[in-house]
Length: 440
Image (cartoon, rainbow, N blue to C red; front, side, top):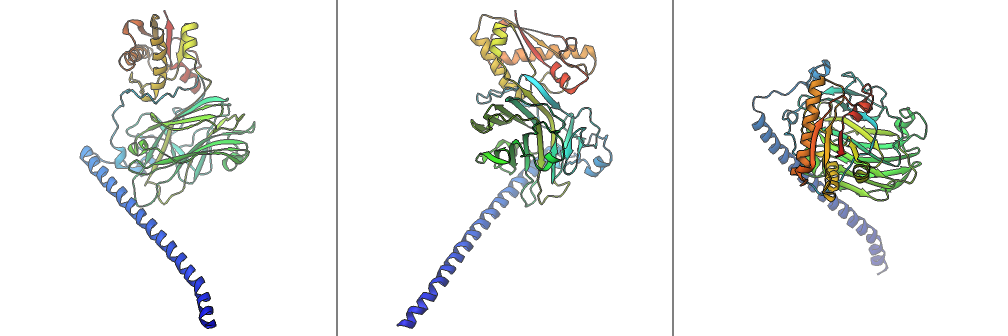
């Protein structure tokens, strides 16, 4: 009897161990099965996209990545894959009642790399790895190509203030090869009076205060992202992962990221979809003055992916459209954006137009003159004509999209003749590309 009892006691730990082992094994099998299933789904989606692309692009020849790298002045993309061969149609301005992003009133920093040399890191930037300015075959302007295992700081040193907005365009050129896509991070930090692009902040960017967002790209609408903020190196806010379904639809195309900070509150949009609205995300008194970006490590090799960044803009302050237009009689904004050298209004302008339309409809008796302005780039006469067309496009959008009475609107353009900023600087040019509303 004693022997049986001893044997039973010895078997108990073994049984528990075996049960624990089986539980862990079962969990691993389930996880592996789920992973395989996800990979099959992603591969199936990729094949579907490939067929669709081939049907659209028959006869098109992909650009040569190596050739683009060796010939920086070329307009071929630095990292071309089939997904980059099809230019997206210009999106129409559509009604989206949830999109209420309005950029800050005063431009602090802007960077579209127009004055930067192809093949070089932008002037004043710093990085732990490498990066170069490139042109892309289907998208206008210049872009900064980001590389894995590289962290980037911009050339800005001006403070953002307590209320500010940050915007940028991002292209993720991704094609599934059985591994997780490389992650992409962005953020803002305070350097507390120290040089904003110093080597210290390449590693120790949480030293004073920071706001950080990270995208985890995935196919089939399963891209996720999270937001985390820090105060003197410690986590201040840790948000839950949010799905950014629109991101997958824009692989190989520019997606517009917009962030608005109002003291402690932080909101973020991807195109017109709101992703975060956190009322207590930012530690009180945190004054940011630097932007950071990072391309994380993955199993993808150079040439198998692409990350491109452009059209950065930081603006501070809060627009008071009603007070300026109704009481002061004049309102000016740089927040109505257009395609390059065209009168096509970009979708990210929706929030500003909605705000203006609300003021006009609440004060139905007033009439306003819409005046378009440009910077000094290009021909004077063409700039004048472009400014007139853009003013007319704004009036049309206010009428057709927001129901503003056409009889209350007049339009004209002044081209580059009335600058409010220095056309020799990037920020000055951005200030001059504006739309004015004057009560008549």
